[in-house]
Length: 92
Image (tube, rainbow, N blue to C red):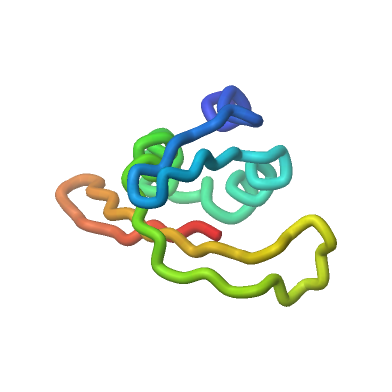
């Protein structure tokens, strides 16, 4: 998880949109809790910078949780190949 902590607050460019995305402390906690269990998930997290850079914007929609600081939510997808197997990583 040290790798993820080093990314906290860093601007990460996305080639598809030109947006600069950030990983927050809350993102790191969620990733560690939900996606750092299996070896494949740990390998994917190690490449999160590349996933963010190459992810493709699939959809945007208004925030449905009523957060004042969130105008809309964007969902991105990126291909991830681990051990010869292809996976689809998604992020919100």
